[in-house]
Structures are given as structure tokens and as C-alpha cells.
Length: 183
Image 1 (cartoon, one colour):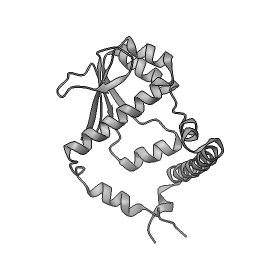
Image 2 (cartoon, rainbow, N blue to C red):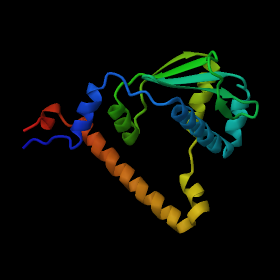
Image 3 (cartoon, helix red, strand yellow):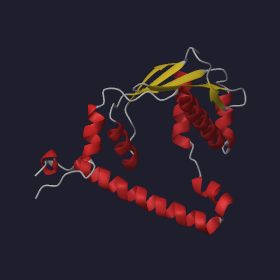
């Protein structure tokens, strides 16, 4: 008996969309602002990361995936801010995987996305160091809101769900294509 991916209709629909729908500017700016706030929250928990970034003050990094892009500038304090519109990036990072489902599957299995990098080597090295060494302690932040035991329970459950989804996604990737055909 052959099985079919239960959400294959989403993959089919995503494959038919030539371009993502345009998001309103206020939504894009608001989302980017919140991403910068989250990145700075994580950076503030690691003084060494802020010191490392402070050496790159004024530098601009631009990240792009398909039509979506975001440019950030390093502040003198070693944090990030949205770069001014039209700022010339010192570093361009492009995620080359076009499929959102493949990116999500890779994230669940712990795989790094394929990227293309162009620009300042030192800035790229420092950003790579941050990606390798910074981790958001979600459980600690949640514990401040709800207490240690509920935060631990929620995070342990989330890790089990993430691991199960990762095993499922990994099994789907490893299974031969003939097993996924429609009946």
C-alpha cells in the first residue's frame, strides 16, 4: 500500500504560486521590527556576542529569501537595528532554497539551509559565529511569566513535538519517491 503525504495539497498549492502575495508595508515593517527586537533580546543575554558585533558598528547586512528581504545595521552598542531604506549592504545573504516546505522540513530536521554569501568576509564570519553560538533560552523567559515548573513542562512538550515532527520530516525525505505516489 502506498501512502501520500497528508498535506500534499499545501505543497501543490505552494508550487502553483509564482510569487508570494504582496504583504502591506506596515505588516512587513512591523514584522521586521519585532524580529530585530527578538534578535536584540537574545544578544543582550550574551555580552560576548554584543562585544563581537560592536566591532562591526555601522555595517549593514541584508538577508533575502525569494521576494522577502530585510536589512539590519549593527549599532555601536553591538545590537541590531533596521537599516535605513536604500542603505547599501556590506554583506548579502540569500537563502537559495525556493520552497517554503523544504525550508520548514530542513528546520525541523536541524539541516542548515543552502545560502549564497556576497560581501564583507569579517562581517560574515561574525554573523556565522553568532549563528553557531547564540541560543534563545525560551524556557528561562517563559519561567519569568508563568513560573519554573509550567515553563519546563511547556518547553519539554514543545521539544517532544519538534523531535517527532523532525523524525517525520526526516523519514519523508529518506523514503523513496515511489512510496509517496497517489493510489
